[in-house]
Every structure is written in structure tokens, then in C-alpha cells.
Length: 180
Image (cartoon, rainbow, N blue to C red; front, top):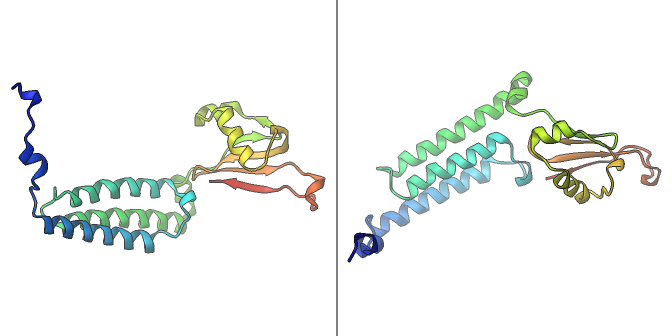
């Protein structure tokens, strides 16, 4: 039989690591990540920042190796996960403590609509189509661009909208909404 049609059934189905070790590794990593996520993140899921997204991606990679026993010990994986969490916390703390650094860590809002007019150059720069923008605006009750005083792409990926003054809102003030 040709080599590309043969299957090594033993290596496919027989665990190379004792089953109890696999259960123990999975349990330790799950509980460690659970407590880290439960007590380390207080933001809403819809407002995940760039550093939080990076941390989640790196945690996934680091914990996968520990779960799959590619590390010699679970402590190797835990140490890597804790190192990633440390950097995430440190960057957030530095950004809070030093406002000038915050500008580097979190992008400034990018205007997409001003006074009912599309800012096409900014849409192109952010690779947002008119249809995508209108979809986000409709979720906030905006039917026409003329209703928008200002719409910005925020640093966390949401689009915030300030509607034009409307006599029907009762207060005569712009209404502010955000989409996650």
C-alpha cells in the first residue's frame, strides 16, 4: 500500500501522555485562565482594547502548549501566561499613570462622518466601506447621514455617534450613542 494512504493507528489514537496527566494539565490551565480572566478583566467584552486582544491571542497560544504537554511542566506554561498577564497589566497601568503614553497605547478617535458628510479619506484609511458604516449607524437608529453631527471610530473599535440637534429629543442637545 502506498505510504500516503497508510495510517499509523497507534499514534493516532493511543495517547502519548498518561490520561491522568492530560486531565491534570487541562484542569490546572483551565482554572488558572478562569481566575485570571475572572479577576483580571473588568471591562465589558464589547470594549476589548488592542492590548487586551493581544493578551488573549498570546494566552491562547501559551496555554495551548501547556495543555498539549509540549512544555516539560505545567509551570512552564503558567509562567508564560503570568508573564503575558503582567505585561498587559503594566501597559494599562502605565497608560493610566502617564497620559502621554496613553496616546501611544490607545489610538485616538478617527472621525468618519462630520456634519452629515462622509470623510472618505478616513474611511479608506480604516478600510471601512460605506455599507459597513451605514450598518453600524442603523444599529443606533440613524437612517440618513444627515442625522449625524459626528461619528468616530474609537480606539477600541467601536463607532460612536453624536446625532444632530433634534427638537424631538426634548432637550435640544446632541444625543450620544456607541456601538460595540
